[in-house]
Amino acid sequence: MQGDSLSQTTIWATITTAHTPGPEGQRAMEELVSRYHPAVERYIRLKLRDRHLADEVIQEFWHKVLTHKLAGADKNKGRFRDYIRTVLHRLVIDHFRARKLQSLPPGELLDPSSPDADYDRVWREVVIKRVLSRLETFEIQTAKNRYATVLNLRLKEPDASIEELTEKLSTQLGVTVSPEAFRKTLQRARAKFLELLILELKETIHPASPEDIEAEIYDLGLGHWYRRYSSEGNG
Image 1 (cartoon, rainbow, N blue to C red):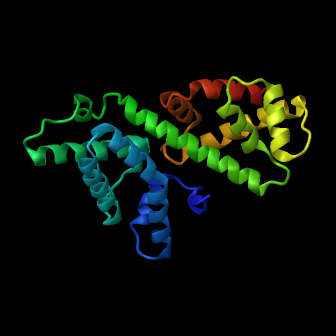
Image 2: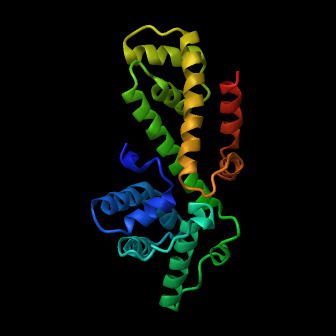
Image 3: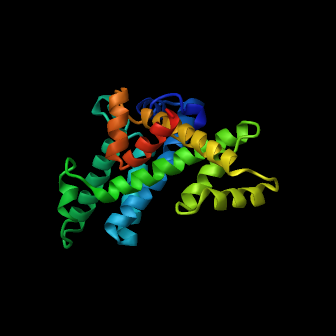
């Protein structure tokens, strides 16, 4: 997966590296762009619902990143997603004020400490996509591993029976898979997903104690997965 060469460090360290000259800095900058562009773009377009204004804000954000205007990011701020949200909110407000004739966007943008369900949902979806991508990479790199395949089947058809999913997998692979084998693989896939989710979140939080990670999982609305996947992994 793109960006995995930097995946053993926190995103705060990646920001610092991205603002240094040389190949390492360039790789770190590429990691930042590839990792967070989807969340930034989806959130701004959802929030503004004005294509031209959204384009301006998105371009301004990445201009600040690429010209090292975010070099002062402080890891002691805590969660990286909170930092990004604050930057985006300020950019949106600045653009609205610059137009003068337009009223400011919804009040939640004026108070970075207030909840923003749209932002949390977009960030959650991007996190899940990144973790599934990590799981797919794990499957590719591990012989006879079907974790990503099996988990994706379950996620796409949450109401299907194990027997139905087993039949689909058997057809897809061209070999016979038993329901019991599918069930065991799914259990292991969920445990691996949880492991990779924790790794993903560790990179965006400082400090990243188990309590901090668990709190972030619940704040992102992933608590139901965490409870289920944890109980299965302990079973």
